[in-house]
Length: 121
Image 1 (cartoon, rainbow, N blue to C red):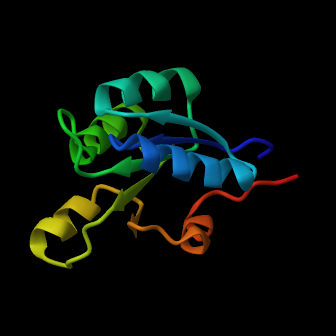
Image 2 (cartoon, rainbow, N blue to C red):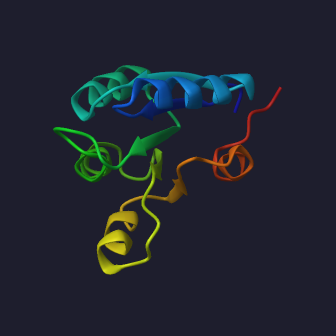
């Protein structure tokens, strides 16, 4: 795979931009979206390999967006929850079952690299 396309979805612009910059420095091609509706448009046009989703967003949150993405793309796209949640309670377990991986904020770049598809030169 020559280019690995990633979409970062977070309603906090600084968080989305920081994560996108970090990924770009690692060689990923990145687009950002600030809400679920915008994310659907970006994802349809960009066809990413991976989507990093904030869980708590106004309007269409990360869980609803992940359900929509699974309906549209099945397992073609890797879904990663990027969230401040971490308590292993039932609500959290149900939420994370919708995603392929989850990473807690503040995210560890090394952990993120382990779950993203590798970039080849």
